[in-house]
Length: 60
Image (tube, rainbow, N blue to C red; front, side, top):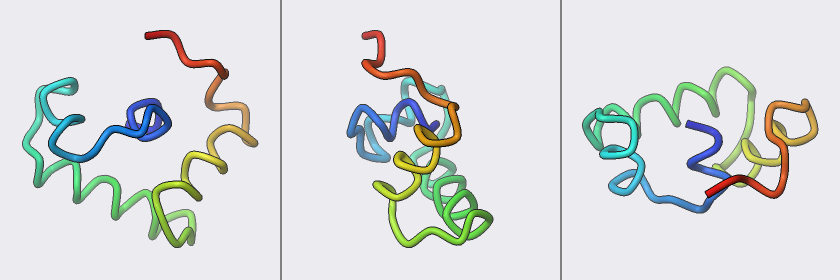
């Protein structure tokens, strides 16, 4: 999910990549933000990068 966010994908673009519904994506993104105390999707990407969860540049 975080890799998709880091690529700048919207919920409707992430859903088919992960074979889930758009509503599921929105729910998981919200849960990630709540769990980490972050305000938006970009903050989640920054958090993941700083925590070593993402290697940039991302492969296509």
